Image: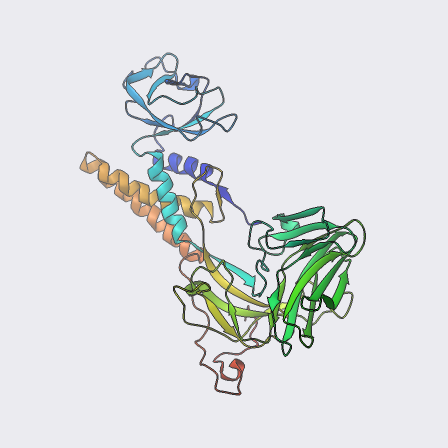
Amino acid sequence: MATTVTLATLLERLTENLWPGQFPVKITATGGAVGTFIAATAAYSSGHANAYDGVGIYMLSTTDALAPQGEFVKVTSAGFTPASGTFAVSPAWTVSPASGDVGLFLYGLPPDNIIDAINDIQRTMKVPRFLPLSLITDGDMETTGVGNWTDVGAPTTKAKITTAAETLLRQALDVAAGLDAGVTTANIAVEDTDTVYLSVPIRTQTGSVKVILYNATASSIIKSVTVSATPYTEVRFSEGVPASCKNVTVRLLGGEAGSRWRTGWVSLLTNNKVYSLPSAIVDSSEFIQAYYLYNLHSGTSNDTLRMWDQELRVWPSELLPRDWRGASPNRIAIDTPLYGPIFVSFRSALAVLSALTDTTEIPEELLVEGALGICLKQLAARARSPQVEAKLKARQARAETNYFSMLESKGLGSPTVVYSGVRRSPAGRSIADTISYPAWRSIGG
């Protein structure tokens, strides 16, 4: 998986950068009561009782990850006892601090402002991603749960996993089942004049797995391919829809007792031209380009391919006008697949961070510098002297310069359109006939 950083780590880094000359900033409690915070390392015989008046204490972590973790209080007037490092606080903690709990001292900004600054940067980030197009709900494995994968027989395991060695994209479907047990997709409506294009990467742990294109109308198998390879192997084939067939499904079933396998995606396309973009694409403006997963290398049979021996090559595509009130507002028109899955690349917004354990894939330094500039601007606005204000604004300018420099180098801002507009094809001609760039240009070329 991509490297991630937690909200707790970002809060700690920002606090240290906001008040580098202050002590303490991050400190470990040695005890306390509901109305105090005790840190023996803060004891100072020459300290003054008013030294920390109004300073905030945010409980970053506790030894049991329970209250008062995440609570915020302030040191009362003359509330510091220098001899013992005891801070009287208000309001009271809901639970007394314990030895080993970690507090952040905040000198002028409450934690909500700092978290809001982090999320103000987080909201603007657009991370590059790519996913396969598929008529199958959750065929791209983006949904967290497994509600879209119906049991066939009685599989003993059915879950999504994110282990890097076991996934091809963000998640993979993990299934353990016996012979002819496993999972199936929901029905996909087809016509008996359609051709179906199927791509399913499989990694077996034990036993084998059957990838089945199933005629749900006649309750019969259209085609079945068995995989027993340990590395990811892509099952890929095209098949005409049988006469009178109105619905198909894809079944992933154990090929023998004690089988277990991972599925990277299930991409089912037809010779239709228009598809809904993956649900991860909130707005069609996030779309960048469509690609064809090209492969000339065989696997263990004519219907299997070695995974990632392929190239992603630009494929003719055109966004349809967005239907702002439609159930599927973002659609794309593509040329008919040649014999393989179509991927779309896009830039995806990230969810805001709220829990201390929430994570983000955005580089830590980028988020810290961006949020630091926002927080310093707020501190400058609250400064009580022109000299302090000027220093804070100078630090703000440096943080913003660093942020924009890193933002440009990482390419995480707004989407950069890399495709040319495609004209609507005249009758009898494919999109490829009117495309304004080479249809077989490699992703890197």
